[in-house]
Image 1 (spheres, one colour):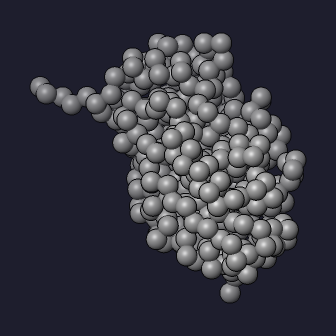
Image 2 (cartoon, helix red, strand yellow):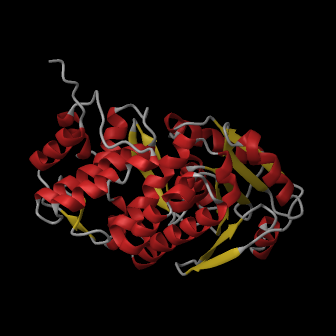
Length: 367
């Protein structure tokens, strides 16, 4: 039996976020958007395709007989304009017009790429998000950010483009490997750290159930995490103010990700970035020492790193200057003045970043 819960996202144009435990309600949601008998392109990747492409296609056949599947090669290294070019060619060859629909079925990379394709193909074609990873369900599928990497720099080419619907089948999280699951959890914890101390404490209290992937607990967790992001994005859809708070842990996290040639998962880098940002907050006397160590240590039971090796701190600081969040050479850095209380600072120095990085960089003692 499908258990559907719907949240109305009051951004313009507004769209629903649907929480389900199957794909049973998907066809009705798409019909309600008036895409009956339109062509539908399911954009997925080579990891997700064998798991869910046929199931989603079957769920969409009552809407349209013309359902196509296109799989991009899985992995962040394929999130580039060359692959977007291939998706354009697929859509053109199959005569998609601006009244048809793109469905993004996958994690954050697929969602970003399918959304960017939708925003630019024929100057804009509708798209729907069906996120299949915890990271995509709680973060990247919400809020209309789309884009691709450029020469290894994260999301340097993109657009704000809202989906018509976000449909979350929580049961797909059961097929995630532990590394990808806990990578997504970094974004969940981030939401608690920046906006909701009670949610942060709830996460710690339900640590065992989360790690065991209890579906009822995961549903509650995903809904609450999405609600935090929804409220932030509704207030600031194009990142001119409060939405920047969602970048907590990402300034140094993205730089670490590039420095490691994307060999670490995104959430692992975010966790490291959160620890570094909390350290800077402590040294600026915004957090107590006890709060810093609690924030640092709470990533450990969720299998997320709090230290890293084989990186150069100065290189990472240099990479932050090319981050898309930089403003006139000033790095906009999100800090904490308590759990659940984040703010944007433009006065974090290179030395402060270096000190924070040196705190998390593991150096083997050869003595």
